[in-house]
Length: 444
Image 1 (cartoon, rainbow, N blue to C red):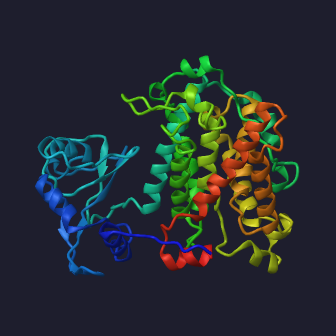
Image 2: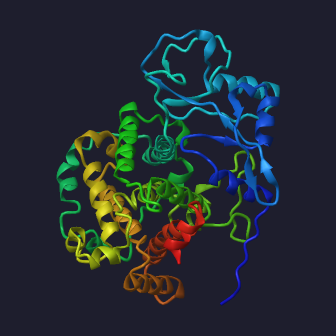
Image 3: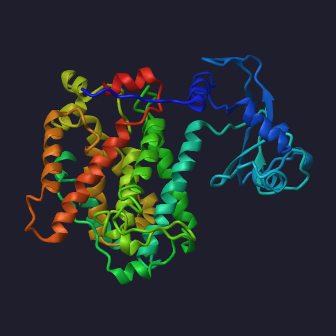
């Protein structure tokens, strides 16, 4: 085999040691970052760690912890005004002086530094201070949920924009929704070609700007609730956990934006004013994936749910033990099928009807969304040799020109379907965000 080399610089080595020596629910900073905060007048946000950490090649290094707490909207406690300020207000002050801070609020919850010294009142925020009896920390899972809420909210805006801003009741789809997933196992729903939605050039040119779309509060609240429920399905496994799902989600989003290369002989050019690609040009060079936000939403959603309720052991072990789920799913893609079934059951609850109305408005869109989720999650089973062989054959078939006389739309959809499957596969196994020994164990 060909030799493979990876070259890591000082930043990567330092970051790796920082990650290994970190503590749960705490933010560790290097001395260089701490110095930047001090220069920005934000030294009160940090305090030195009591012990140094050892960094290979650099020796012992002093690091810092950031003082954080959780602030939530809706509940108000009595507290001296001089003791707290929001990150946003402090960040604006920092930016005006040095321009080095990048603190942001996320959703309706904020991570707030202690002892900021600001006097402005924030009547709508509830501040839980260090050591207080009712202190409520924002956990890592909370932060990941909020991050995924923001990601999917952005895609929801794009979906609604592609429909001209229309969001109507989907009460008429109840019968169709009730039938989805009721005919056999999830794997038996798999099809080799998913027919994506096509948009005319004029539709793409005149599409509303997603940023002009306001998602109703009910739908956004339901999205947060759904993602929280999905996160709760994940077990505390070394590898197949909610952090892993979020890592895969980040990789999927990056790869979705890189299905095509700009400026490499394909006629695509970015808009110098906002770095956005012309959808009309892009649609023809991404097999229709980029022009259909519902497809993108389905793929990202699949990344989030793909290991929900994973037992922490391979499918082969479940089959060997004759586990109940292995019997239900006929010893094929056991964990993957279970994830789809569990999440879909929650997703179909009446409490998420406003969210579903944002995602799809017609039975056609509902069925396409379901099919995309099924195909994408099933593609994460890379151990089953039979499925892998079929997938490889379908890739070769799609790009070999074997079906050069079939309708163009079918050929493009054939390619789009297999590209999506390989995209999530690459995202699922190629990143190394876990500890190396865990990553190696699951990816040998």
